[in-house]
Length: 451
Image (cartoon, rainbow, N blue to C red; front, top):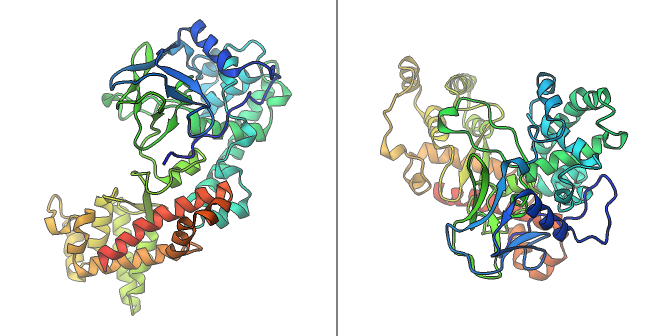
């Protein structure tokens, strides 16, 4: 089953464009002018795609075949835009928590520049007013549909950061350069929409291995590459080279089939938060469920009976914080087939469950070093073999996590199994249901394994 992916694309939000012009024809003509080479085996189309524009194979494609190559000069970034010099000179004043401000200012300028070289590219952008990220949902709807998933909390942080960034950095910069930013782009609403667009459509070039200690590369817009929709089981991948970014087939792609890139190993809650869509269950093999670290502490506190036990438990917790295994806002991440935070969860269960005398010895020795036993391995298949106290604490933590949702698993299963009822749900209700159901299936698997 194909994913409901990016929403339909129409002409960009700023500046009038001729509605009679075919945006795909204009984009392909622009590609030829700027040296963006598309294979004759691929086509940009609305036909045969999961949603909106996508890329489809005209002929069968074999693994390793080049689908298109994007010259670096065609990329839209803070370094290639027409105000790159100014952005570089003002780099210190444009630093922010997100690191996206220079690119966003580049987009705000190019969108309203009458002669922007990227105008044909903007014509294939989604209509910014129709983006489906949960940050654009009414707060009541967002909380009602996504309670327990972690999305409402992530969105609230985003909205606070966007507002702060806009009023403290972006708007003062635009007002200081009125010749470069017309009044119509000095808008929190437009900035909000562009943040969502960068979140969903930009790319971040990976650092070289020897550069791991450096700050991440700034995001950039990659024409043609951002047309491709996402699947966990993708059939193409973007490769970076000194002069070009190349999209290469990774699997055989039959004629008429859509070409999919991957946005990375994304759980459904991350997909809906950052991209505005999900992969229907069980398609997303990268789906995960979170158990908040403080929930494990709460579950452990339930097992204490006297104040001395509670004091000792907080001592253990504080020591785990010192080891950087837990934090007040952290989460243990559980996938379908593995625990992604195995070391953190193993250490937490061990420390919280060990006898008091063993904990004193553990603290004195400052941990175990590399003394890890096979029976303590926290792989999914090994969970039934864990010590009883570990399994009980993990189980209690799962039960507390399930209480954070507004509905139970059976309610979700009934909705999904009744096609007629499911079809009557709104698009947002369907997407949110898929997020909740995928997470609860992982959590219920843990209940079975710890039972």
